[in-house]
Image (cartoon, rainbow, N blue to C red; front, side, top):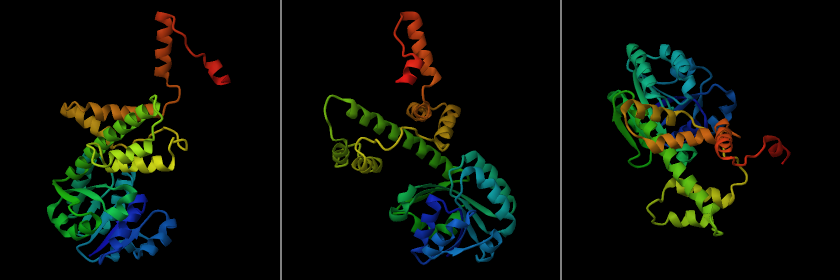
Length: 303
């Protein structure tokens, strides 16, 4: 089949390239024209405008949106009026499932089918495939399934249920990812700070050989430690892209004690604070009630 693609970021471009390795065809648009040559190198066709993209597709059309959450509504506003009844829009970005439900109402009102696709695989998906969690119109899922089959590894995609379910499952997936990453981070810090001179790269490799904590994340840790054993080339500041926050919000609404997910999210917040006010408050309270020594800010600056 031929499919339209809007958004050629780190994942979008690789998804297009993976599709183009098969008998399927892609016509793609991107806000920045700087991606044009790279796209043409995959064998895909470049569309200068949304009108060009839609005109190049045969009904019933399928257009995959792969843009940041903040740009989804604007893109839908631009593409939806160009589509016809029976066409399909697919949102493959990380969006909150309640926003997905809202968007589906207006898309369905226009006679266009809608799918929400949670996509996992990062920059490695080009080679190993993307794990995809799909929600929305079942007939639309059946229509685009040939493309899902080539994007995913074996057994790597699932129709999860009605609108929003794909993005909901991906939200929980990313919350779990936060917790797993935090556990590895704390464990390796403990190994790094102990009395023994341990080879962390070798330990990561060992644990991936049959241990109960082996995983792809641990393989990535092994790779990173091979290149930079003491992790001296980066700062320990960790961003969050929203899904972890949404998962914690949902846990609160449902009364689910998602302790690990919440702590992992807050640890990311803490990683971005230098000399946090809360830590200064802790220090001053210890000084006030117990006379404990504190580090003077002026002395710390001179150091």
